Image (cartoon, rainbow, N blue to C red; front, side, top):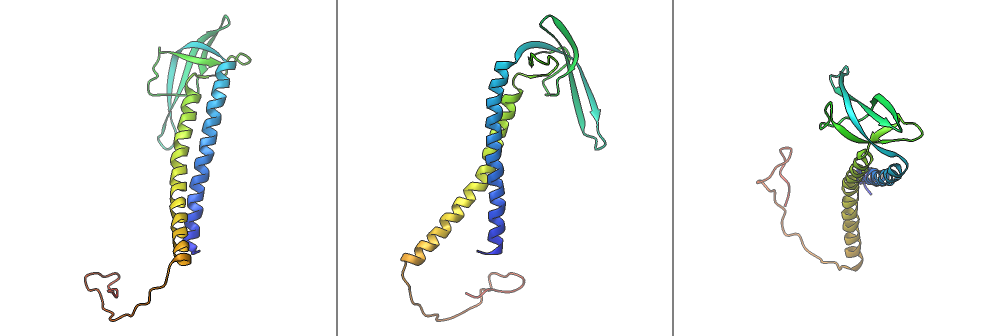
Length: 175
């Protein structure tokens, strides 16, 4: 095996590993999302404030705060921790509230979106890593099979010429 082939196998193996890991994490997020919906309570909240902040690189971060009522108690200006472009002040959204810690909230669809996104990216990474590995393996198997079951053809070279129609590094290959 050549040095370049080893490096290609390592890179493709990393892609395949990361893809499979992402699929597993996405699936576990979806499973835990179902458990989270079963143990947490769904409440309607209103977005009261959306603030923006720039970091030193000029990137803008949004912070969303909501008001909601849970078990007769009002909670005001609780940080949501997530921002989407469809959010605006005054909008009503469904949130999940942890009964043990009522200020521990999240959007109902957040875990589902994260899980599906993780699975989607995992499939892409896994395909980028696994498909070329399969083709490389099959190519090596085909060469091995040909060497084992093929037959020799004896030939005589009758001439050797330069191909002036093609050059690389100002050199013409022999044909």
